[in-house]
Length: 123
Image 1: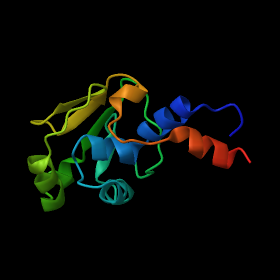
Image 2 (image 1 turned 60 degrees about the vertical axis):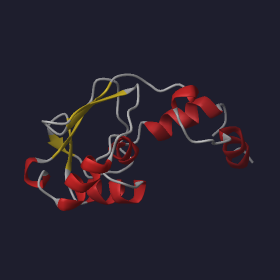
Image 3 (image 1 turned 90 degrees about the vertical axis):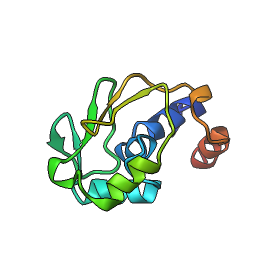
């Protein structure tokens, strides 16, 4: 992890598919998002992706697979979710969202001291 700054580390974590599924409100927790991805309920640009660590790029469209749109876990989470993030766009009617840009540190709500993580893995 030599040469990686805390900002870059945070951006890499935020770009993971399971994290974006969580941020879009498709799943109530990151663990639940990881499971939805692993069980092939999520698409990226129209193709099913089952790798939670898949790195999304700007412009990628994340959606709920057609067969999975009626799952109670997904509909319940979407109805309870009200969080909005500036780097993500969510279309409730189509159950799809788009990655608009890379989030800056100020756009991430968690209070994480990412430099400590970088220091730990630099040893």
